[in-house]
Amino acid sequence: MAEGSLEAPIRHPVRWQDPDFYDEAKLDEEMRRIFDICHGCRRCFNLCDSFPRLFDLVDGSESEELDTVASADFKPVVDACTLCDMCFLTKCPYVPPHEFNLDFPHLMLRYRAVELKKGSVAWGERQLTETDRNGALARPVAGLCNWAADNKNRLTRPLMEKALGVHRDAALPQYHSRTLEARGRSEVPTVNRTAPAFGRKALIYATCFSNYNDPDIGTAARKVLAHNGVETDIVYPACCGMPQLEHGDVARVAETAVKVAAELRARVDDGWTVIGLVPSCVLMLKFEWALLVPDDDNVKALAAATRDIDEFIVDIARKEGLAEGLKPLDGGVTLHIACHARAQNIGQKSTELLKLIPEADLKVIERCSGHGGSWGVMKDNFEVAMKVGKPVARQARQAGKTYLASGCPLAADHILQGMERVEGEAALPSETHHPIELFARAYGF
Image (cartoon, rainbow, N blue to C red; front, side, top):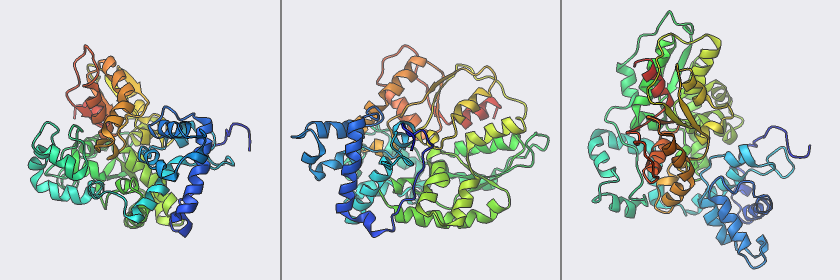
C-alpha cells in the first residue's frame, strides 16, 4: 500500500444479505472505527453537513474523543448524508484499497437499512419515495396536483408539511398528464440516415423523473439522437430505486435491479446502448445495482451497456462526428455539474457537450447544490440544503447567464431557488434546463 493511497478507489459489494449487516452492535463498532478516522482527518469538512455535525459532536464531548459520545447521538450525522458519494470519490484518502477500508456513504446506507428494518423511517418520507405509484396517481389529475404542490399555495403546503414532513417553501417537481412512455409510442422522430453516427441504437431509460415530471428531457434527447442517426426506443420497466436506496431499502432495490436487468438483457445483447437521462439513475444502473447483486450476469451486462445521455452524445462527437445544424445560444449558460454525474467518474461530460455548441459561453460550477434527492425538500433539511448550496447559488447569480442547467433537474431547481435569496443585478433565469434540452435548442428543436 503506497503512502497517500494513490491507487484508484475500489468499491466492495454491499453485504446486505449477511445477518451481521443488521447487527446493531457490530454496526456501532464500525461506525466508531470510521468516525474516529474521519475526526482525525477532516478533509471532508466542506462537502456536506454530515462532517461538521460529526466533528462538532466529538469536539463537544467530555473527552473530545469518541469514547464519550453516545451512539444515539450519531443519528443527526447519518441524517445529513445525501449519498452523493463525493467524500468517497473526491476527498477521502482511506478508501479501498487502503487498509483502513473506509466507505462513508455505504456506512450511512447500512445505518439506514437497520433503521428501516426497525421501522424507524417516517411514514411520510417513505410515501415520497414511491415515485412510480405517485406518478401514476398524479397523471390523471396533474393540474390539481401541481396546484397543491406549488410552494406559493399557502392552503395546501402547510398541510403537506404536517402530513409528509415536506418543507412548505421547498420547490417541488410538477407532474404531466402525458408520460414520456406515452409520447414515445406516438412521437417517433425520423432517423437521419445521412448522419455520421447512423447505425447506432439506443434505449432511452425514461427514469421516473423524466417519465412523470419532465418528459421534455426525453423528447429533447430523442430528437437530438435521431438527428444524429441514432435509432431510439423509450423504455421504463421501473424506477431505478435511488429513492428507496436513500432510506436503506436495499432488498427492494436489489429486487428491482434483477427484474429490470433481465427484462432489458435481450436488447443489450442485440447491441442497444442504454441511455439514462438523470445522473442518479445512471449511477444506479452502472454501479450501485452491481454492488447489491454482484453475481447477477444480467446486471453486469446492463452496467456495461449503460451511458449518461451527455456522455453518449460526446462519444458520437469524438468517434463519428455530429450532424450539422448547431447554432449559438444567446446569453450564455451557467452549468452545474451534478454530484452523481461526478460519481460516475467520466469527467465533465455536460461541459464537453455544451462546448460543442458554437460560441459556447459557459460558467461551470462543480460543487454540491445541497439538494440530495428527496432529502433537501424535507422540513428538517431544507434550510440546511439551502446553506450547503449557497456557494453554488451565489456563483450562479454572479454569472448572470440567460440559462441555468444541470444534469440533475432537482438540483437545478434548488439552485434557482437559492439564487432568489442572493442579491444580484442580473435578472434571474425564468426556468431551468437539462443540458440535453439546451443542446436540442441549439439544433433548433
